Length: 280
Image (cartoon, helix red, strand yellow):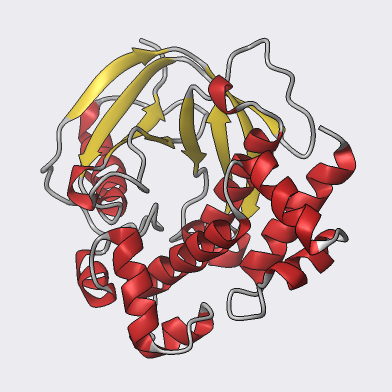
């Protein structure tokens, strides 16, 4: 795909994330893309596989889902911050997207992947297993700041893969979270959002070629809402690891998202936290 067309997609994606409460009409976003509204609508749909209005609605509601779980704002304020004129219209759109009302979603805590909060030693309530895993190669984008905002990076990776016709090459969805949220300000956290790909795939900027080592890993399988990932991190580092006799390798833990959150009920989501271990 022409580099200028790719840059237009990324400009528009960034604009939507930066202005969820603003004017995200076709005319405005066509102006951001520097293309006529008629042509931009067709080009965006052709390159990403998704109509522009649908992408706007999805990103707005995804941002709302993050606010519901991770902030204490009233639902009416969240509706306004993501561009809905009233609570009723927001609630209808949210329920159509997530299958539940905003307050029910907030109570179930299903927005993720979340920031691990390290607490005193915990008792083990999850299964942990040692596996030999193959190395992974990711086409990824870096994210700086609150881990709960990494959805922006994943969205950009998705648009790049769709625009380049690479979606059939995706072998998995991976989030890499090397920093301890308890040890530094959220604004300084670093992470990567990426798709696992085969060795022969050409990875062009702005995507980065990120390598995760193979070998022995401890794997925690988390079934249910994304909110369970933070507790699983806590149990891994504060309960399992100190008593395991194992030593973590010099490589970050990562999350393998095994189910599609857009189509899977929260209670049925399956994800794995994988921590590389030193060889025996």
